Length: 68
Image (cartoon, rainbow, N blue to C red; front, side, top):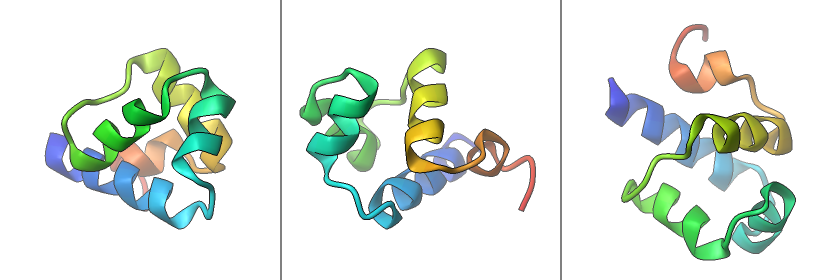
């Protein structure tokens, strides 16, 4: 299940059209942190996850696999 969540998060980041640096600046993390999310080395905390969903304009339910 976690693999699916990470894959959907990676897809949302990649499909956002935003650079990793822009995403990182928007949510207050270092750009290497976004890179770690893309490589599945790290999963964001709940607060960061919520901020990511907002910045990426994607539903948290979608990322979590609760709705299509």
